[in-house]
Image (tube, rainbow, N blue to C red; front, side):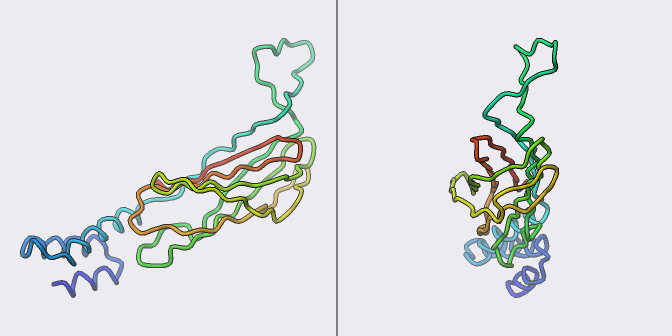
Length: 188
């Protein structure tokens, strides 16, 4: 039966593998290999059903913009029209595949939608894996994104771990004048 359970795992039929490991545990409660296989199969069955969700771009301009002439903007958050961007993150591979490589590449794309081009000062990647935060600066692939243009500006690389419960990546892009934008992708 252990051979059948292992074959189900190798065939990526994780629900079947979990049931077989569970049956082994009913017959032989102390079987460590079956207990480990069952835990791994349960995680894998859940992992293949999860997806990566990208959040919304959050902008943090250094200076406030000017509101429409003749309107009181004292109680309104008016943003600078110079640093307006959309930040996207694309994952490769696009799903976690248990039993395969756990290396990933997150491609960071920036689109300038403001009145000026965006000059990139720095890019920071903050990964939270099962509650543990790690940060790394990313090397910009371009120094500037022209007005009304889009470009791949960086790639974050890393590894997932088997049996992880939570994972997310937050990317923060700093402009040359201190403006910033960020976005997050989460495994849900």
